[in-house]
Length: 155
Image (cartoon, rainbow, N blue to C red; front, side, top):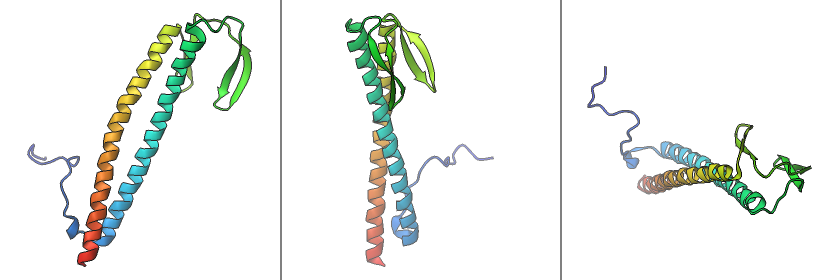
């Protein structure tokens, strides 16, 4: 049984890069590059989702709450991101809200706006956290690059 004083594997300890062979430094650099690429892609996807939720808020505000749309008004209904079919607005008192994984619920326009606003804020916090992680990984990549360069010059 491990004692309480021993460090958990999740805690990182500094590594002397000069003691590592070039092949291992290259491997570490490649791993950091892949992680950074994955995190950057995730960041872009979160930004896109945030923009989608903002568009939903804008549609509710401009289309329903300002009274611009009336029952029976012709609209385009999205079936997929690139396929729309013609339809007519059935009600302005309730809207369908996509709550994820293909599930929809009816909400009043103010409740729907509040739902999407909360989603935008949550994604904003996630983006801020992810940005901090990306910056840390970029710093690690720079350190490994510099260490690799230094080891190359010494050997």
